[in-house]
Length: 66
Image (cartoon, rainbow, N blue to C red; front, side, top):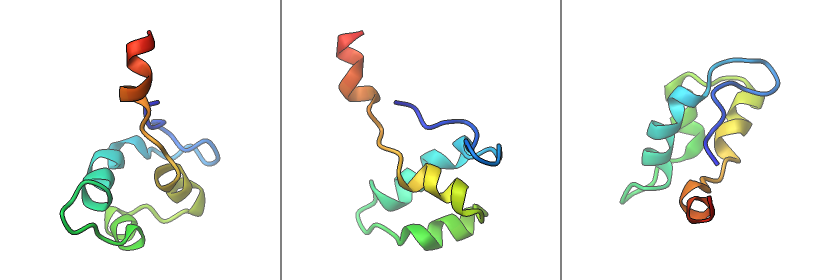
């Protein structure tokens, strides 16, 4: 579904970084290393990194069934 707005563990805002993270690591012609992208975005905690790295965007897959 949609990326959570806040980290489930610590409550920091992580949703604001999703679009840039996705664009730079998954949709770019030459994808960047996720570790470096998260460092540049200022996402330092492991729990917050997990929220972005492990997220699978399912909106396009699920939306026809709603």
